[in-house]
Amino acid sequence: ATTCNPLYPTIFTPPSVTPTVAPVASNRWLALRLEGLGAIIVLLASLLAVCSDSVSAGLGGLSITYALSVTQTLNWFVRMNSDCETQVVAAERVAEYAEIESEAPSIVEGYRPPNGWPSQGTIQFKGTTMRYRPGMPLVLGRGQKGLDVAITPEQKVGVVGRTGAGKSSLLLVLL
Figure 1 (cartoon, rainbow, N blue to C red):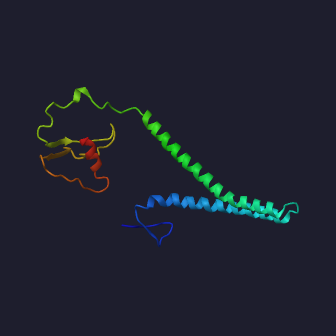
Figure 2: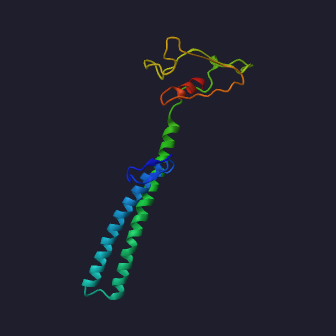
Figure 3: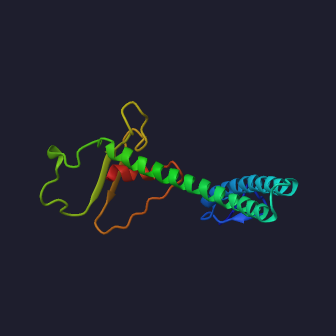
């Protein structure tokens, strides 16, 4: 399955490549601008070398050579700065997530299962409903009775449905 690239409607892009299109396009955009800036610097160095009477041929050639390397140096500097900023943001996110308080303890003593649990491997939902927080509408078991399902041991079950049908919500209820 391929999708039409909005930047180039005649080119089809595989979905696995789509997330890399924006960074590559922005890198090319930036490189084009930096190369333009470098070309202006080379032009100025060349004009100064040619128009100035006090600059020798060797010194003029050296200044043009250094001006040519400015493009590469600018490109490298901007990309390294961008990569460094991206990595710092990733580290900041990890530090931020590490400081978030846990919503609930991992073991709640009053709600531990019995020692022999599970004895059969049967899963039963009887009148199960779910909402994400109080006051929100039901996202699972929207009917008057709720969700009633019985899954016997060794029975294979597949959960299918359209987007928004409640597949993930059903998994949340199980966990």
